[in-house]
Length: 142
Image 1: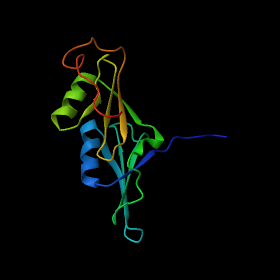
Image 2: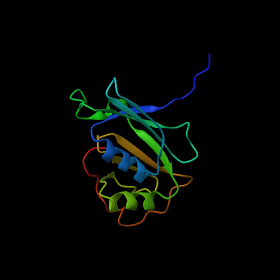
Image 3: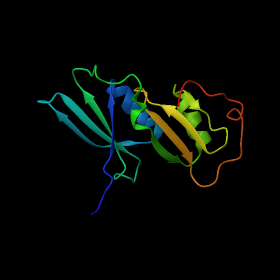
């Protein structure tokens, strides 16, 4: 029996804010389906060159009152980054809270506009510790 990864799905309340967040991470839209009859949109976003690793943003046009207040029931998304400090600075400069700063030069956590936890991991060996990250405290939950 063969198993093949397809995607991770997250429900979003504000489609444009969510797309902007995932674009800040470096993901690009790879596929979109707008269903008039079902009144929903599916937007697939993946890292460049990795269309087989998408996150599916599911947006219900009429709202989604059933969305849990904390979407962590599924865990988190994880992405490897070339320079964790540069990525965290880029996200922070664009208004994203760094919930778990990369104090160790290796790992950080942020949250999407829909409270989805996203883990960022440094490619290869951890970077040498550097400020302001070393002294930065955790913010909220991650």
